[in-house]
Image (cartoon, rainbow, N blue to C red; front, top):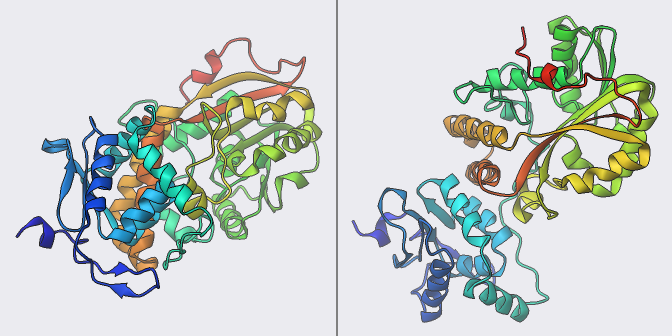
Length: 423
């Protein structure tokens, strides 16, 4: 069987400009020219590009060869017009497919696009100028947003002990996801030097796993704020089952409503949703709620240079998210008289976490497909694979920032206490 009839996208129906469904047509000379420009832009990588007629362009060969199959002409032109958004949409719909290692494909794209602009860049600019004004037709499939999905979905592929949707901490590369997530929770608690008499306020508590861990292992008293009703209900039930409901209060409210005084402020995985325009207000909240000798920690995805999150992820998967640089985080601390005591970058740990998540997601893809649909499966596969690449070779970082009030030093003089093995 030849390539034209064997590939699942080749006979896929294509979308006409008037919304009608039409059979794929023959390729034009310009189609091949565009495919050749694509291949030239990614020269030196394993990436090849194949059109719906079976023609293929690129230098990739051997075991690492990766082929991006483009199923129809409208898909090719949509990709040319706005690749950052349209690749994800078209991949989700099956009109673009990737033959080979998806993570390696995205890593190769990152490496190539980090080079000076080539002819592909100028082709995109010309097309954008020609088509300036009209918006692209919305995808027929509604990709579910990040927090309208339900607990059952996340339980399929997150860890089974603390249900953490944040970076784990790998003391050794062979650690299981469960071991690494528990190690992450202990790592944060040691940084904060938690003591049984401490009162803690948590901003963005997720499903409650960290608050419950702090209460059980360190005996502290926690108020955990979260605006997700579904997560709050789950967390309260979990705390009851674990016998720590008297130590943990889950409050369905925005972080800006935090009241009272606490020894410790902690936030794991919330800052990405706050937005730089609210960083000063977050600092004011911390300043208001921390006791004179209080300390705090913020754990957040970040960047090594200012930029927006990938447009497709921001629009389809992670709406409104912004990973800040360390410089962008400064308004949290400086105007409110907070001193940064320690910064640790866990970038390789998040890459390993995402590899575990992606493997578990793939193992449960049939269940996910029954819960949602095929475009949803493909979208989340691409999201997890692309995020893995962003932490292995891209600009994404994972910052843990430890802080206290200016002029105060409530923690030991050295970092030895942070890296002691937990009992």
